Amino acid sequence: MNNHQFRHTQTAHCESGVISNLLGHHGLKISEPMAFGIGAGIFFAHLPFVKVNGVPGTTYRIWPGAIFQRVCKRLGVKMETAKFSSPEKGMAALDRVVAGGSPVGLLSSVYYLPYFPPSYRFHFNAHNLVVYGKRDDQYLVSDPVMDTVTEIDPDSLAQARFAKGFPAPKGKMYYPVHVPGKASFEKPIKEGIAQTCHYMLKIPFPMFGVKGIRFLANRVKDYPEKVGERKSALYLGNVIRMQEEIGTGGAGFRFVYAAFLQESAVLLNKPELSRLATELTQAGDLWRNFAFSAGRVCKSRSANNVSYKELSEMLIQCAAAEETFFKKLAKI
Image (cartoon, rainbow, N blue to C red):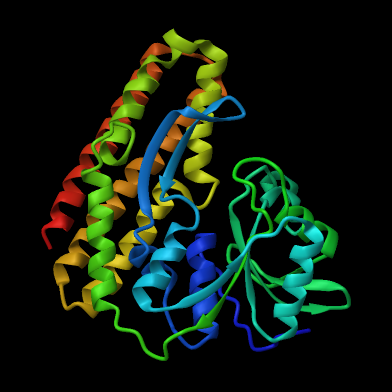
C-alpha cells in the first residue's frame, strides 16, 4: 500500500497544513494561509477554570477541528470522518482506506510519535498528520510540521491515535470523498474574515478575543501575590508554551493570518488587506517580545512584582494592537 503521488509540503501548523496537503492531493490547490484564514483559525482565549495538569488553559487559535470543518463547508468539500472504540478497529479501518489509494488524515498525540525529537514529545492530543501508504509493515507519514515524509511503526501509531487524556483522539480519521474541481475563494474569504472579527471583538464574555488578552494581562499582574513564586512561573511558562511551542502559537498564527490577508488582497483586488497584513505582523512581533521577556522571568524563578507588571503591560499592548487591527479589518 503506497501512494507515490502524495506531495508533502511542510507548513507552520498541523491542521491547516493537513487541509492544504489533502485537498491539494485531490486537485484543489489551497495554501496553508488560505486554509487558516477561510477557517477563521486565529483566536484568543484564557480559561482559568479549564486546567490541564493544574495549569490554566490559554489558546491562540480556534478549537481543534474547527478550521477543518469550516474550510470544507465553505469550499463544498465532503469528508468521511470516523472515531473508534478500540485500536484494532481503528487500525483496520485505516488499512482499508489506505489500501484503496486514499491518503488519510489522523488525529494523534505528539507524545507517541517517535519521529519527533524527545524534547518535542509532550502530551498534546490534537496533532494532525497524514498517512498516505504502507511499506514493509511501516506506515508512510506526511506530518506537515516536518520537512520531509517519514515512517512510523503500527504500535506507535496506534498509541498516538488512542492516547488517553483530554481531548482523547479516539482514533479519529478523515479523508475526502468529494472535492470540487474548482472552487471560488471570494465568498469563503469574506465569510472567514467576518467570523474572525466577530470572535475577536464581539463575544460578550471577558475570557475570549481581545477581551481575553486583557483578562490574561490582569491575572498575570497579580500572579506573584495570589499564587506564589512557584505557581507564577508555572502558569506563565504555560502561556509561553502554548504561544511558542504548541500548534504555532500566538505570534506564529498572526504571521500565518497576515500571509492569508496578502493572498486575499490579490484575489479580491483589495490592496488595503495587504496594508493590514503589515499591521498584524507588527502585532505578532509584540507577542514574540512578550514571550522573550516572559521566558526570562520564568528562568530567573524570581516572582518579582515589577517584572510581572511589565509583562501585564506588554499584553495590554498586544490587546490594543489587535483591537485596532480587527476593527479596521471588519470594515473592509
